Amino acid sequence: MPNNTDQLTRFLFDELGVRGEIVTLDSSWQAALSKHDYPTVVAEQLGQALAASLLLSATLKFDGSLIIQIRGDGPINLLVSQADDQQAVRGLAHWNGDVPDGNLSSLFGHGVLVMTIKPTKGKAYQGVVSLEGDTLSDALQAYFTQSEQLKTRLWFAVNGEHAVGLMLQELPMHEGEEADWERVEMLANTITDDELLNLNSEEVIHRLFHEETVRLFEPEPVEFKCDCSQEKVEASLLTLGLKELRSLVEERGVIEADCDFCNKHYQFDAIDIEQLFSEGKIGGSAVKH
Ligand SMILES: [Zn+2]
Image (cartoon, rainbow, N blue to C red):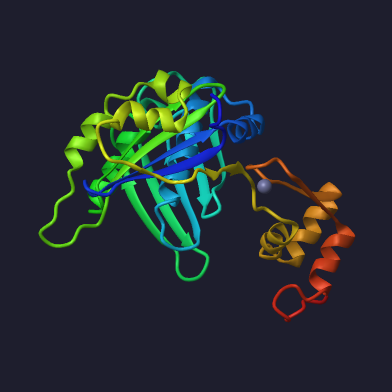
């Protein structure tokens, strides 16, 4: 896949009132895969979720991040993916035992799709719908329909090397105008997994929309990046309280915390814990015993 690694390309049908995006994950996909020993079926869902969060976060008009989460009682009990305005993405899946290939309900059981939008400044917004349809694409489409947002469709193709997503979204229209949504959607529907995985973004757009007037924007780089930090782990430890932490250290020697997204290892011994509290890192009200 030449000239097309780890990038997001936006395109626009000015006359038809529709915008599009294609995202391709390559080394960022390898980075996500390397964190856990994912069965193929689970990896496929993760690849789709990573692509989806990047595609959808790129539609936000403010700085912040978008998180897609699926929780269920099936073989895959958690799927999370988060992307921000810098096209940094991270994600993970938790599963139990053998995961048979199948539709969403056989993979996730009874589940919910949670979409969280977290602006850098301001309040977070969260929408929850029950998990519906056969694929993640169906579930996301149901989410947009139920929350009465702009018409949105996504297509995904994932293999061991690439995770690719294509999205179309209706543009907000002025009164009396109407997007030529069906025409663009019908053209996009002719895409195959093989084409998404083996053509670069420009070729995909040409293949689908060569009869339309399409404005293509400069591709933006995408990377797998985790924003966990010593400070964030400390902050979450502080919520347990000194008493609890002291007894944990006594029991285990050290308190260990691994970031599930990037596998970074954090460790705190008895002295670290005492310091955490004596340094007044809990908003000035230092706890001393
Ligand atoms: Zn991390």
